[in-house]
Image 1 (cartoon, rainbow, N blue to C red):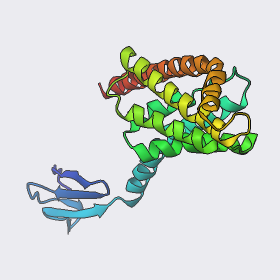
Image 2 (cartoon, helix red, strand yellow):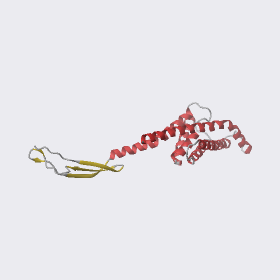
Image 3 (spheres, helix red, strand yellow):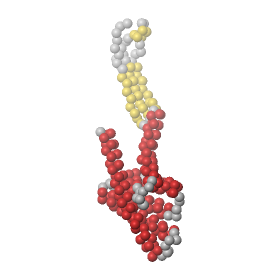
Image 4 (cartoon, one colour):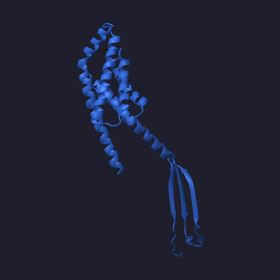
Length: 231
């Protein structure tokens, strides 16, 4: 058999997430040759087509779904366990999580669900109480505050923490006043409820600032990692 040389070319191009256009050109220069005695090999041959990459598309979709729910799932676990483990009164990350979720996701209803569902799971463990609705309403306010924050500068952290803590203090203590028999149902009784709640306010404010700073640090670390992976 005589020696021969052929040139082939093939390539592909991904059109969409799950469709791939492919093409091949075999024996580009139409070389005459034999691979077996007196049996001619194929002439120039062109093939092309569209291939659906089903499993690859499904894996990408599932991976994206996992990534979308990874962070909220971790936050829910943190919030639930932060209430169960021993801690000072009112020193939890629940308000700061509401602010951060409103800032990070920019999806108010989804953020509200995450933070309220976390609180609800804790209430399942500790037991339901008369002020649950007022507590959830205070958390919703924190998410709304976070949705208006454009960045996590220190000034925005302090402003968001103060507004959320004051709102939570006013709403929850109003709930205690209106749903319990501890106070008279008049202005003096409401004022007394707020005065007796003041010793717990500083822990609410300090914990919100502290944990929101922690969320800020984790957020900046994740941003740096994404930039590093992209470069």
